Image 1 (cartoon, rainbow, N blue to C red):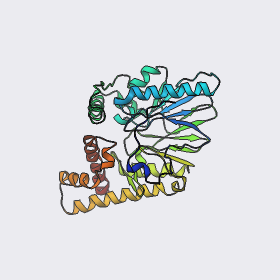
Image 2: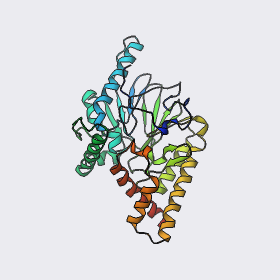
Image 3: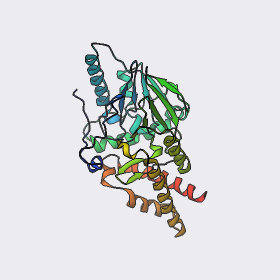
Image 4: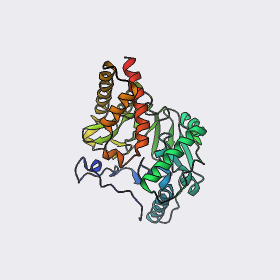
Length: 325
């Protein structure tokens, strides 16, 4: 296949050693990375009867992501004696620009695909103010990563055709995907559990791995909800865990990852508690938070303005959590 895959040569991707492949999916599940740019990952899940795309990635590279899907489908057709393949489902983890931005380009190519997401996600994508912010952040990402492309950042075709509630299932044949509400990062976040492989596609509500011993805590809405979501995912006892903005983690970490996330949540709350005790204002705390947690690794995956916006939401959620203790 001639897929266009983004550069992986930054320190984050080698935290478990050069021999570790974060996109080595379990042998019992046919799954392909079709990501074409920075931001959220996009995976094609190939079932025995149907296919599903998990997330779409950013708008600025949407046409390339759609081409990557085309290339993968063509490969599957050759691999399976000419059997035609089509995209049946698009699974949205949540409504943020770096995960759903390329949806219009993908639906241009695969108009019959059924877009699946939460009820809250459907509501958000129908709001003009949400589309305006998605467009603004998408344009900033385009200028950061492909400043000469001039590609329009589209917000048409934003939709959810099938609302998934907690515990709803999608059949791909012998394979089943179960959706779980995992709030915290957003109120529209879903995690997906694929059986029989035992693969959990965890939502951002349960963290983003940014170092061998550091899990980022992107709970923009609620830290208590986020911690509850981590327990919910942990209770599934997944055989394999795939994290947003990273990929597969070593199986030896399955039993400790979610506890590591919860410990980092507590550490962030301690960070805020200490500054509240000093009498710092919200603006002062925000500047200290950004100074503490902004890094070159983040810069390679996210525009600074998006980080600042998210940091503001995280800080407000932390303050609420501490004050409600």
